[in-house]
Length: 197
Length: 197
Image 1 (cartoon, rainbow over the protein chains, first blue to last red):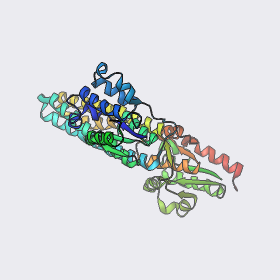
Image 2 (image 1 turned 90 degrees about the vertical axis):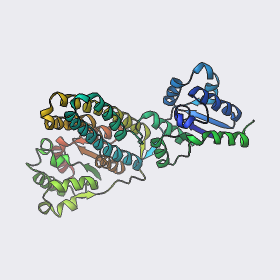
Image 3 (image 1 turned 180 degrees about the vertical axis):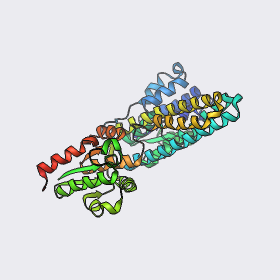
Image 4 (image 1 turned 120 degrees about the vertical axis):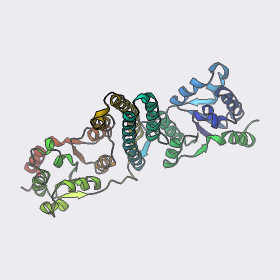
């Protein structure tokens, strides 16, 4: 059995879902048509957090019950899986560096605001953007992302994502991955090779 | 063999080292006199990061070579130790919460500074204090702290620390611990029970 663990970006991120459909619901529908052809040979999983995110973007009534049938929802078994210490060590180091960077971003915003006291809202918007970039971009920072990685590890599945933070961790933890941008081609090829077409 | 892994706070933090000595060097000397009596029965370890911190505070020439003899320096074996996934999961969740809090602290500082433009340095000092409190206090945020925990896990040793972040993680990971404040009493008792004194 070939197994994939799916990230939301496949359906939600316009730059990524492009080839699958013009909106999340269309992308999901076209994915499900491939999944149907692969039923019994290829399994697609999502973690509970990712499923919640998906259902915020996809019109459920238009894809049910196929979405329940072809996308398996499963939490990772967080009590049995173990992470190599050096991976956590690197995570802590990375977070520490970013926390220091976040403070510098905040100090810059304070110094800007006293020079330009009439644009405080604009400065705060910029602060939020820069702070987010400093602390969150390209790093594993949510339990939803971590769940996805753990699930792939537990199932020995391939992660399908376009998120740099997720892909970086997948590589550290020895997990197979496919870039979400290439997922449609992978599905087509799979249908040709193993599907019931 | 009874084993302890030592944190810097035992010697450096005035509220903690109190009973051992008036300054880091005195505290180290009085610790080493206990360690000498316990040699061969009780082992004391530090990780490389903690040892570096210690040597910044202690006058090395006053405690050498006893410090090298009675305090064993050893890095944890980060490639063999594995961490239960749920512990990392909780760490990520905690960090995410604190990152959000850090942004609120930064926004507050910006809003304060436009009202009080002549006190920008004071506001920045307050920002640093509050940011640090929001993001770092009581959390495992440095690789030095993590090394100490891993070393204790690897050696099945007891952690001696007064740091809330370290003690919280020690408990999550099933590691024995002694509050650094009680360490002098523990050493006295040990000398009585197992020492050659």
